[in-house]
Length: 316
Image (tube, rainbow, N blue to C red; front, side, top):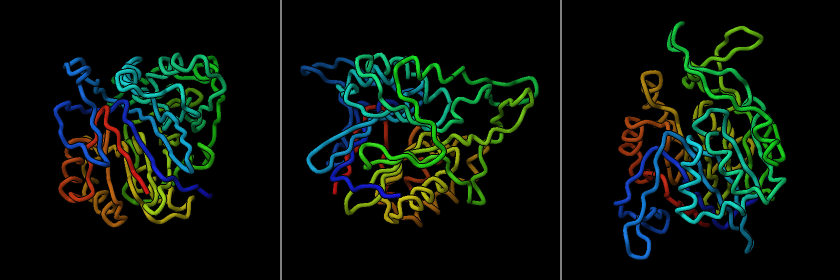
């Protein structure tokens, strides 16, 4: 499926798990959020266990943007967007990586910011609305995800697009990846994720997990994930397969390598990433401290530390 090249791709992180307003590593690629306003220390950016990003594409003298995921709390990511001066009203599409609440929580606040702009596409896998979903730590301990249904989207004036197939966005300069094939032998999903279907409990493979891909002229693909429950390596391979573009510029997003279920595959995942040789690797959100430290050590020249409020710019 063809994806058009962009002269520049910008990813402004509106929410991530980490923030350090004293970071001084700004560069042509990295721009950190500043707590200063009118030469006074005014406010900090919020960090929460969630993810949200404003993605902008610049090509042929024009620019367009979409919102990818909406953060955890009702107002965390939206508050950061206001502090950062992000132009949310300009977005042409809302894209949801999967139906977990650390990615859906801020939808109502963002929809209020778009209340005068109806008909914006809301693109997701149809499985995002599956309920009930929960994490099962034992027969007596089941932690449920909040309700999230189609009415939540439709009542706010969005044009709902449910698709398991890749879907073009921003006039062909971006692609929603659709359902991601599980082909690796080590990315086996989240063992405690469950859901109910027709009153019966079953393991939740989180088939709705997806991502986004863009294409920087001469540099290759920029692949953005929410949690990569399908596996970050599976996600990259799918993006390469559907676009036909083998060169990878950037792999960014939650890689879900945190905790005892996933720490055993940190090294294998890192080796696979090294073999794909992206120019940049940007682990966020649920990747986990141990995995981030390992990736930084093994891929020093490619690693970028992300945080809430960081804007990354990838140019031709």
